[in-house]
Length: 310
Image: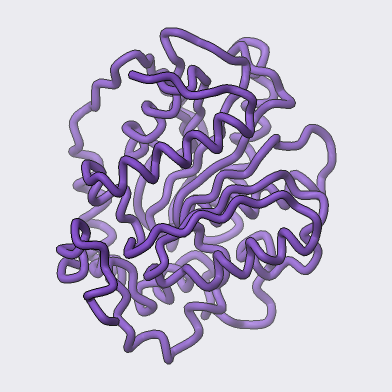
């Protein structure tokens, strides 16, 4: 890939590939170990409660609650790393600025726990939140589901599962650079493009670990790879965002277009010159701050609350 396409303030990410170790078992173990060593992150204006689970949950409550809405959040990490705790900064910002409750899921990880275990953990978290809604001061019918990267894929699949089961539905789906389609990983011609941060080789390793089989096979279920679902009608409004140089751009664009074709309200946000995970790796950059502010603004509008300046 032409590195000149990367936004200037993110250009260093074109040369650094911090996630390449995820292709290897030792790399996954290393990053999981480092995650456990992260010190607690103080979050201004937000209290955090930990529910041991399973699955483990982190409940973020604003000191000034402005709404009875809530977000069920699913972390990323290529299905193989990460935890609810790694989303403290992101969930804390949402909680404080929108004055809403956020519940982050600590789903189990592949390859030790392949599909459907992580998906089942997310569904269990949805049911827990619906049951605990009254005690949390949350309105059951005003809960959004969101996630980033692999968490975005899990979120999209969870929305589909809830739709098919009937009952109370999420009010919105908030998908940040979601991993939606294992068939992308099967396109070997993408390997040589060497997308910044998240390459197709890494993508293929992630999907292989999650599916416990090679990506691209005909028998992959739609709940595992949400882009495989044929009928998308009846799903809640969606926000889908992705960088235009992200490996996942095409599958995100196609999913957004198909949602629209099936009558679902969709906002598709393209971030020029942004590679996968830029807003987390370069969180302090101007492009990341502006992007996250726009994403939170959409979420606030979807659940019926406007943002509040810090």
